[in-house]
Image (cartoon, rainbow, N blue to C red; front, side, top):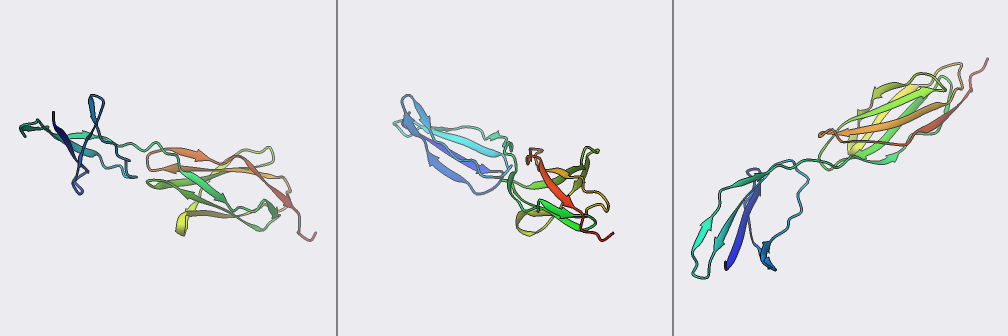
Length: 168
């Protein structure tokens, strides 16, 4: 074998042709997979010293996303006051696409509730809510993000301390 060339493309995108490099008794060429879920289609052209060649059939490699979303910055204030608006806000990124961000919270030792957050610009997600009147139980919360492939990441549990600022 004198040379081996690979022809590949993502889905039906632009065709890329590269020569493989001899490494011991193997021909090799490595790629870094793009942040896309399009399959990689490839074929080889193999030539001998007399320029005789063969062309293989096109083959497909399925690409899967196994990267969890990145939880970059939780901008939620950790202090709140009874009966007032509180804004939960976090910046989330993913190599493909973030599909859902969910706030899970509870007051004191109470039952947990889950609420979907709303997407803003530039990767920020938010959820405004009013803290209850008449209770200074701490609010425990964590935020989970899910990408389009079902990979999940979540913050550690945090505590919002609530003080009573209402006039009796």
